[in-house]
Image 1 (spheres, rainbow, N blue to C red):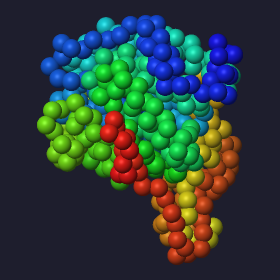
Image 2 (cartoon, one colour; image 1 turned 60 degrees about the horizontal axis):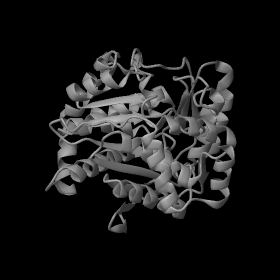
Image 3 (cartoon, rainbow, N blue to C red; image 1 turned 180 degrees about the horizontal axis):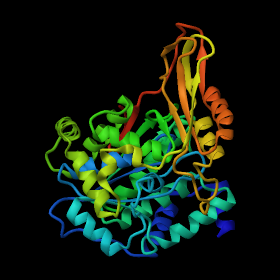
Length: 406
């Protein structure tokens, strides 16, 4: 199998070969059936980025719209964090539950969020571990097959893919990200799963928080109607895409209005509280985020001179999180759920001497100087009033009819 993975690394796979691989991976385990539910099932998958805590707000939001979200997520690897790690920053929250309980929670709450079980595409789990040690994780056909095999086994009616592009993404170049998105949309539609992909910006972190507990707190803030504007905008856009994809006659404009109302009314927050309680956590964290896993040592990093924020580089922050112990290089590593960074400035912002650029959250005081260096390397300052260029938050939308600029 290592030789096979290396052959794919060098020669790629045709569409027919990829489809055979996906079908084999799906067939290696159980496929779920939610046809008895009173509404359609829909899910979202992100290819991973720095500060991407969207799933925590998105799943309960979509469930509050009357849809069912059976979300199977992963742990962070490399410079990106994972949904399961963020959920486990909530004291008592259980992500390792069996399919029977998963189905019961989905029926009762409208969403459930767990890790991949032994029953779902077990071949994918074994292959992913092998890809990790053979350096073949970021290979496009293998990424597509891994993602889509799990989603096809989930018994979905619709799937929205959030494909990251930019320096902090696994596939930083736009042509690579578009190729992956088109491949996955083709696999989904070829197997009877309505699939849409969005290309979203990862040339800067999403939101302000980087680190599991900090990101969970920011997702809760979003569910309370606040949070960074880019996080809120992406959560609403993805919710609208998911709802419109599986609801006959619902256009994205109306779906956007419904999602916005559900977020601002507290309906999505209430649904997240029900999910937390159903999976063993204490929903009091929604009222008191200080109960989330946190780190005891903090340091504010201040600008040493005035300037314009030219860029906020996501990869140094993601790799810096690994250096603080908050992300893993290999799948079997434990992570510190409390450490991380808050970046408090945005690209294009004018800063003055002494203004806080970011905050380091560390387990030990001895880690704070390293954390400060990481923030300074990520927040790049230029001349006051200088021009900056960033990607649109959502740049492309891909479905079976083709690719359009968003």
